[in-house]
Length: 195
Image (cartoon, rainbow, N blue to C red; front, side, top):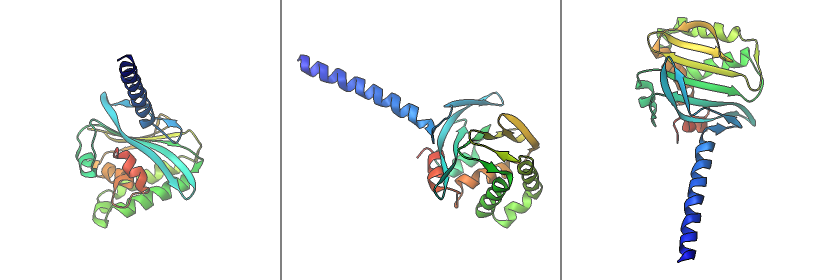
């Protein structure tokens, strides 16, 4: 009887320990710890999922998608009301030309001509934002917040850069760089969707 109780206690403790480890690992990617919850425009957001953007043999950045509630599909994410956040922590040095090119490649791969025609001005402004950032290094952050009634705010290391981009369709096109049919990294897409 004592042996049975001891085994049950051990199994319970092991289960609790495993649960704690799984919870801790869920918010750590690429050696970067991401907050489980953030506040954007006075709205609480939860980490929907996270992953690492890899290119060739390089790890480029760790990323986390924050939403008002957890969603598993792209249409659900894009249809959400309320604030949203895409947060990236660089894992290597990147210059503005690389950032701008990656943005345009991702946008072109996941938006058709008609979509892109609707937000040409915002695409140009996003290009200006990238051009204003000469270089980013390992550990620097890029945060892209959607704030209802305002628009998309781009923050570099916590400081807003460039103009607010007001079109929700543009923000959704921006998210499709990672979540679209041709994402920049399929495993990152799965991670952001919590798969």
